[in-house]
Length: 175
Image (cartoon, rainbow, N blue to C red; front, top):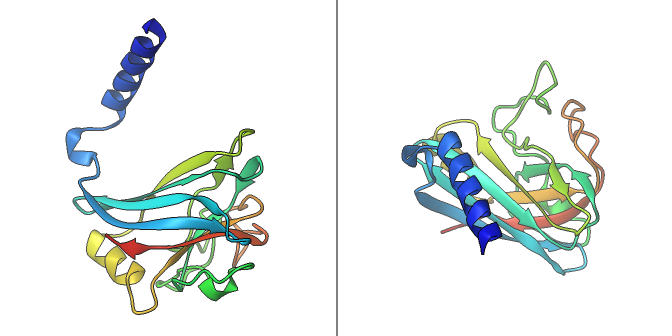
C-alpha cells in the first residue's frame, strides 16, 4: 500500500509539473487497432486534441525489444503481410524526411517507439499544424495508417529514415 501511495504521489507530482488542465487532451478524434503482418494484435493508437494541439499516443505489445521507426502513411489500408497498401509517408507539404534532415520534416515523421524487454512500449507525439489542418490531412478520402517498422528511424534519410520493413499497421478511424 505504501509503495502504491508513493507511486501515485510521484506520478501526480510529475504530471503537475508537465501539464496544465488546459493542455490535457479533451477530444478523442480517432483510434486505430494495430496488427502485425501475420494478423496478430499488436496494440492501439489514440489521436486526441486539446484545442488546436493534436497528439497521437501509441501502445504496443508482443514485439521484440528495441527502437522502431513509427510513421503516419498516406493510405488508410493495412493489407498484410508487408503493409505496402498504406503507401508512402503522409507528406502533404512535399517535404523531405526526418527532423535531422535540413530539408525535413514531414507530417508522417514521428518519434521512434522504444519496445522494452517485455515486448511492450508506448510513445506520444504532438503533430505539427492546427487541428483543422491535421484533420483535413488525416481524414482525406483514402484515410491514414500508422506504421511501425522493424528498425529505428535515423531521422534524416529520405524517404523512410532507414527504418526497415513494415511490421505493424493500423488505420486511423474517426471517433
